[in-house]
Image 1 (cartoon, rainbow, N blue to C red):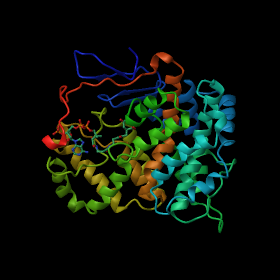
Image 2: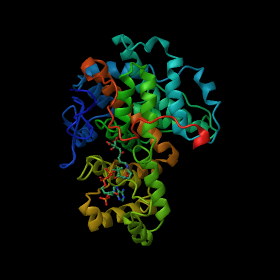
Image 3: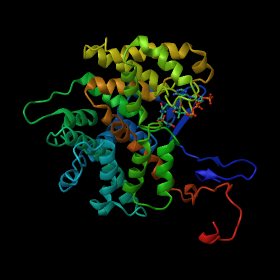
Image 4: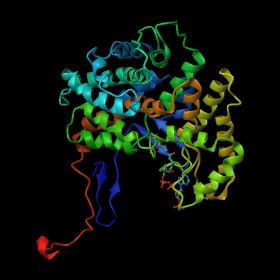
Length: 393
Ligand code: SDX
């Protein structure tokens, strides 16, 4: 009844999963984390507090938040041996290829938190991944630009620590701008969970085989990389650059409508939202703040993005199909303005979504009823037939 996929002979396979973590109403454009609307959390909360909420179901007291933040902070360093692991990659490796490999390899370093039958080990594995994903992603960035790794600092908050690990260099002090840190923290919050999307379903399915938590999250990272899913933020910015100037937008709008043209408006449309993605609205506000601060408000990419959004929201093709900008449409603009290369965008999405994957995995592992064997199939291949020798073929 409560598996991820249920099979009813009366219909083609239906996917159903009960969960108490995140609620989406695609028609109303509503997104709730444990009942709290995403715009209120993005405005009033912090990513580390949202992590606590997603994992334990309630907003923490001051003392609970401080204890949780300390537990996470004290696990932000990775095993020193992992530094050598990075040296095996080519410098031009895509950061998502590195993050996928390194997260899976965590099971080779943290043997004391791979036994999923032990609640204590499940908890420590969860804290370790939430704490170390920013370090792992930042190391992938540093490795790709040929700069030395920067260690995490316990005096910085989660978002500031990530920015510092990415942009600090030994040669000079790097001061994290609070407006940029706030925008970064909101991006983490807006991407933290999104009910049973492709990568979360991958994590749940992997977890149903009792695979260790690091392997399950590595499977989620691999799935998120796809340009139709988490890779859309990288693809959306590359698309805006491909369009280049406002006067070229009509040509690309026509291409997006042409079924014979593989071109898609990346950052538009959603499997569930047939209304505006509530995350995109918050993201758009953050984009303005960061671009004003960085004095790039006349950034050509933003001008193309704003003009494209305006046209797409008026064009009957998009209006009829309810194709609105999604979370990925604006996140790429902010990350680009902060200074990240497009290749880092999905790695940042992955570190943000790690808490959501873990919360969903823990919910499933904690309730045997929610574990699934394997999705059923509707077979439509050849009926039984005898082998034909090659001489007769
Ligand atoms: C994420 O599930 C999640 O929660 C995912 C996510 C999360 O937080 O985990 O929200 C993150 O994955 C957001 C989506 C990121 N992907 C993109 O931005 C890639 C571009 N978008 C499309 O690939 C597409 O919109 C999908 C994959 C997102 C949704 O695909 P669907 O369900 O097939 O889209 P649809 O049902 O809304 O399509 C209806 C019509 C179709 O045309 P018709 O057959 O009706 O003529 O709209 C067309 C589609 O061809 N269409 C597009 C389009 N998206 C859909 N046409 C042009 N450009 C687009 N972007």
